[in-house]
Image 1: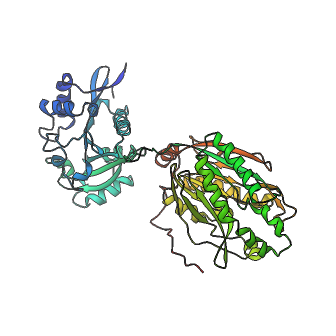
Image 2 (image 1 turned 30 degrees about the vertical axis):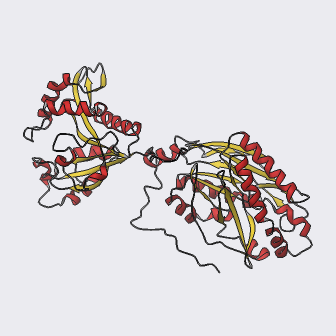
Image 3 (image 1 turned 180 degrees about the vertical axis):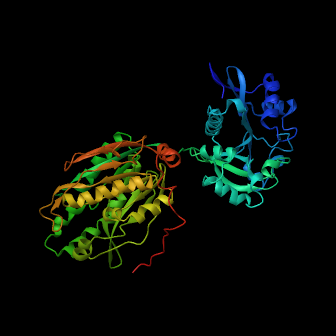
Length: 512
């Protein structure tokens, strides 16, 4: 390793560097005959894609190089060769409108190894792919130690042993340590590469910031503002008065340019006061008659206040069966329905409620979201299935009467944020309803939870309301931080699951 380093600089490759580049390649690839680019090749690369050709210099001496092009990856067979991907070394396969950055060459001279210069070259490529909004990076990686094991191991077996650190392969080890994952074995990839028996490993890196080009004028937001409504239970004269209070809160959170307004479970329970003389099971069915009107009004408010409203939950009759449901009223005028899948023993016993049957994510202008009503948050399988569908934010409207009931929801919700690498927002009701049976007291503290890693609050709490006080809670969440966590987090709960020993699948439930 060289000593007395005065400066290290990453520069674009120029033709003035060619002589040094040629000598470096002859030294690095001494076991491959004529393994250096001619000046015409380098000129073609620079002319076609100057940003893709960089050198790293130490004390103004060339120490390493990275060459790349952009290709339409779908145009090539998944078992392509080096000659094919480079267009027979003409680089006519380069397309400025391509989808993937393809690595043509990368090396560090022996005397400069150990300084992590290769990582700088790979980091530059990643930044370039992000800047150009490419799907990712791909290249055929040599396996120069494979010839030592070719008699007893297939290329696949060799790669597995390298991954398990049973065999040391300097090239493959380095590439995997820089977040490139082996995709497949390429046979006959590089002619003359006897050390690799002409095999290569197709290595890929996915750009987590890639945005698929859209034909719509709108763009998907990355910083999402959540408005949580901690609702005070109080008596209302009628539905109009209750919805006036709901509109007041929507107006308030939309004034702060919130993207979502989240209401609690059974926020409309005060309307049961007029039917308090009836048995609880009949009073709740009378309340269900208001649900279509409430959904219609919420949809109108979502449009007029330009906000996505998550209506908490309400009782709803389907035929003779009673369900606990809610609606996502989007600001584009569409509505979507979600159901409480697990009703509590009290809901079943006192009200005769049924559990729902459908679990799914919802597409919004702020990405994919999920909604689990109260008790459903205590079943981790549900949120994991939603995470597998790409959920970024989980909303949990809840209703709890005592602090221990609230604690179950709170701690389960926080666990869901950690294990599913998502944000979780919970909103509940506070106060008392002395004239509504089975709804006497409420305990709540609305909160927004995050995963626990360096880019997030250390305690996993983004924002929290004051306990048992009517208020709104506003919090911003950054979706890009979730992408970074999935790839580079201290722990990676989603990626590290042992799917080889367990699986989780949804089944189609039949309605009773």
